[in-house]
Amino acid sequence: MNRITKYAALVAAACAVLGFSGPGGASAAAPDSLDWGECTGPGLDPRQQCATLDVPMDYSDPGSPKIRIAVSRIPSEKPPARRGALLLIPGGPGGDSLGDPSGKGQKLPRKVREMYDLVGFAPRGMAPSTAVDCALDPADLSMTKRLPWPAPDGSLDENMATARRTAEACVRDGGELIRHISTANEARDLDRLRAALGEERISAWGVSYGTYVGAVYSQLFPHRADRIVLDSNDDPDHTRVTRNWLAAFEVGVEDTFPEFAKWAARPGNPYRVARTPAEVRSGFLRLAARLDREPLPWPGANPPRLDGNALRQIMLSSLYDPDDYPALAKAIRAAREGDVPPVPEAPPEPVLQNIAAVGVGTVCNDVDWPDSADAYQKDVHESRAVYPLTAGMPRGPMVCAAWPFAPREPAVRITGQGPSNILLVQNERDVATPLAGARKLRRALGERAVMVTVNSTGHDAYLDNGNACGDRTVSRFLATGTRPAADLYCD
Image 1 (tube, rainbow, N blue to C red):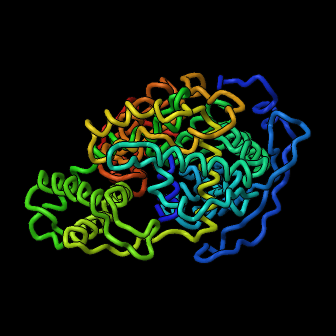
Image 2 (cartoon, rainbow, N blue to C red):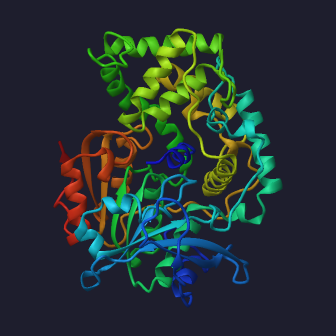
């Protein structure tokens, strides 16, 4: 997972058949053709092609203006063996997969690359698709503002103030499109894309938030879905949606921090921070509390100080991938000595503005959030007591606490109705999409799905932080359609 996608993944971060022309219109409308041409951008495979697709901004309004969706593909490497197209559904909300046919798509086994055109896209609102931007104050682009980290005493006053500023900016500068950014509309866009590709059915590999997009697509268009892989899975509870994904961080951190602690206490590790895993944990908690009281100046960072929440955010980001453990260890070692680590890499401000706006539109339009600090305060205090590593953040108020609009439609309810063609793959220890949430998606899908649980740590399982057994199982399903007869544990 690249840095931009990881940043976006942190922000996060209906009935099966809706009562208007959205799903029906998406599948029944005459498909646009895609005029494939050369892609621009660094590091792309020369075989990758790009195009744009026009889709309705508002699927409930037949006269709605059109918006542009940017699309990419690398055609099948062996046309006689071609089965169809494999959508690479990105995480986020606020990620895109335009570069994925050239990137992670090339990790797929050759047989899979021969069977499918690999297709990426930038979801509605994400540049270079028709883009949204809230023109936020740069200070409010910080992850310690975008995620609801409470004050040292657990107060949520500053979180609510940030939510109001962000919501006001997005209403003022986000335009009409920000009202129509939602998971259900992304799924409808994907069905328009399926039709434009000339496919009766389409396969998909959805990762992180993309698992929810894939599940919603499979619910709205069950007979348009072919082989569906959902990798690192979100809780699909349609009554809470992103609120549950945010809350999952408290469990995900507790699932994964022990792995960091064992690594950071290992003799011979040049980044060792303590003698035992227990001392790693207790030392981290003491250091974060000290920085709450006595922040360190951190020139060039946003905000320009290393306080307890900044350290906790470094912790959260570093637990996505064991390869990032050294970043957290170096931050701990520096702060203990009164120094600061290097400023974390971040995308350019225009990219951050775009990511933030798409995130706001998705999380606030998918489901309604309580609109007062009192509605969150009790849960935050409870979370701080039970899950001290995350200090109450996972139960706090995001921008949606001040969003002035109600969702235009109920969130899609995921059920077991439809073909049995879904394979879930899930690492046992995942900070962002913990196993507990994946099990809820597995139960919701019923006989439609089989789940592969992988004895591994990190976010993104297939061909990334998983293991050989899990990778073989997913590759076999994509290549042959064969799934395990029952849920499988890959040790």
